[in-house]
Image (cartoon, rainbow over the protein chains, first blue to last red):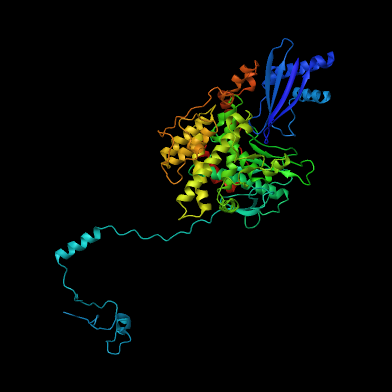
Length: 101
Length: 512
């Protein structure tokens, strides 16, 4: 599975490639964790989380290519306010990307 | 027969008779014995029937209404604030005193806008009702932010004929305020949130910079975010992620243009601009450069965005801020064009700064009404351009105004070219109010590339890369309406503020 995360928006309005995770390059345990986090983001209850409505917020585009080569995309909006935590699975995926650097 | 000579004939006026040595002695009249009768002979004969009738007729004419005693007008409510007329980096206009001509209570707060900064608010006004604080203080930031939010809202409400523009949650009698939060935290951002009913302004220190950039001290940024809140109140369906990029671009452009129009609603800024540019809006200037300190932090010399740009639709990405520059640039060009035309036309009667003020007011009103007329969801640039053309014609603007609108948007590939673009060929007759390059004065322009990605909604974008988008993340109109309903049911409690009660009652009537 390949996960590519892009962040855009904010007041400045830039587009930033936050990074890519290729689970085939991870150990089995780490790859399973990543897949579980993606699955968690895709769950209806996660999706039902109230998305903030507003302007100049950050938009996270999460592009996923699974083992069969199928593509799908999740879009998450976050205020960009440091006092509001990111949804947990997204935050952990970003931590994984940081760890790969 | 005269029994008593009560009224002796004399030429002496009555007020001097007592002193008239030649006149009769009237002193006895004051001592005329009670009960003594006198038969008086009238000096005038009995009135004739004709005279009596005339007198009666005259009396039938209604008496004139007495002129009422003029009541003094109530004193104009208002508070003075120090504001950055642009932002701390723009020295030409600096920080000046401004009057908010409406009731503002401690906070600063009024019936529409509140301010919050834990540990600082409510900020107390002085004995004169003014909010005057030093520049580099939390109180000064609260006062500045409130004043600019209030000025921006007032400007667009005036364009609406003085009618209150609701925030997105002001439905079913809800009168909750928009809360501005200066110094909301440390990060390079500022945003508008409908859920939180707030504008948040953060601060940050660019690497190598000696001091922090406070986004709340920028008139451009505060006006921009307020613009989002105002447009969300007018078009609540435009903030959904299911809208095409151009709808988001309209939102961002409206924010940037709110800053431009707010600056041009102030005579001192217009005068400074005239002096700096020698009345040529295409010269480099502080008006076109938006959010200068933010831009400087990113190494940009003309602000974070430059309204005086030449970008075409094919030259920008679909990110909403990027694509917004095309629309903003076109409107800025139209502003400069109309100003150039009117400056010549009114050169004998008005100062250029005053002409610019009038042109800006007219164009901002035209734009706002065109945005209101655009579709409730999925609006595109062409929808707004056609609405502008239609309204401009209805309000009998000179035909050349519509030539400017068509030319500028056609040059930027927003609308399909119907005729050779006179602006591109340098063939504009600036002295002819009826100048036109299109044969017919219609408002039916179309997209030059109907399949342009900026016109495609989020659902359509998924098709181009074989992706799936969770439906829960895409907001449709029903869901937006449900959100609004939910917001309205959450209660309308505002802390009681006796001074503002009357205004809030009025707002309840308006926000049905």
